[in-house]
Length: 363
Ligand SMILES: NC(=O)C1=CN([C@@H]2O[C@H](COP(=O)(O)OP(=O)(O)OC[C@H]3O[C@@H](n4cnc5c(N)ncnc54)[C@H](O)[C@@H]3O)[C@@H](O)[C@H]2O)C=CC1
Ligand SMILES: O=C(O)C(=O)Cc1ccc(O)cc1
Picture 1 (spheres, rainbow, N blue to C red):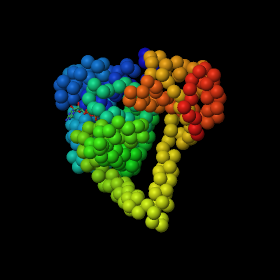
Picture 2: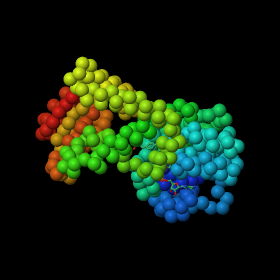
Picture 3: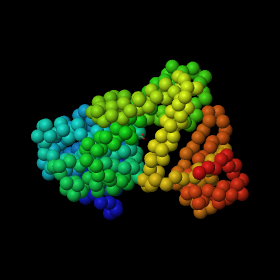
Picture 4: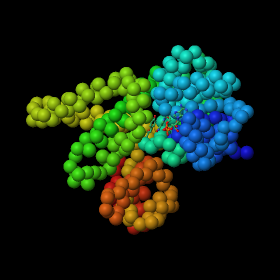
């Protein structure tokens, strides 16, 4: 028998990115998973990928996971609660207060419903983008409310743990305020910045480096999904956007008159506040500690990166993170290796001895 916590059979409604990824992860652990979708071809595709089986008469799931767009989440949750009176029902929508309020207004049986939100995803939807390991190591919020205890929702936590994610209990309002700050506003800022590029000189784009890619990655997200997410969490998003606009106006005023008394200070203060903020983003395993970075030049030939990683292992150093940078047209890649500060000097020496070129090392 596969090692797992979840004892229930699972029904997944919505066979897109999230539903298929959950199905793949659970099916791999031997759970009996049924995939469903309003679109028969989406459902069949998820079944073809191995996320689960077609629905059948007599299915009696103990846990139902609704993975549909936010604006239909409440109505599908209500339908499933009514259709399967013994099942626990959850959903994965990116907003939590609005679907709960809708369900309450419909008179749904909230004693069997607890919404969740995995903080993992991709810019592209659909089963074709799904991955069984999408949730490994990622936070997954259980959005608590007064009609059900976390203990009663134990099977949902079992599912989260079986998928390798980290359960976090937050009530719905705190969840929505939190994701406004860490997910919804970053989406808006990333999109607005990327939108500037559509007007830029084509030659300027040839100069694009990793910094631009870092801050615009999520600008490739699906507008149809995000219109729903932002609309459903509008007050919390605006609460972050307004002070952001004030900060931007202060920077613009300072740059309009950079020589005026106080202007340079205003710019420096804005950038320093950014340093303080970025230092608060937890690293791997949610820890706050910062790592040293070692940048190694890697020939753009097959097997070179694998050789580097093997040799770091041989040196007995645990790699905390890895980032790759490629310049278009260049035959060299840069591998930025994060290690604990105590290991930095030793690893640099080991790698140089083995013939690697170190482009930089910094704490
Ligand atoms: N895309 C992401 O990165 C993340 C998305 N979420 C949430 O997950 C949910 C699903 O998103 P994705 O999987 O990305 O979308 P998706 O577009 O890949 O899949 C949604 C699926 O739901 C189906 N569907 C639509 N209406 C339905 C209905 N009435 N009944 C049954 N099926 C229906 C669609 O046919 C589609 O297959 C959304 O609520 C989203 O907020 C949560 C975390 C991350
Ligand atoms: O791509 C990423 O980094 C994400 O964080 C994706 C994501 C998109 C929507 C969510 O509600 C949660 C996560």
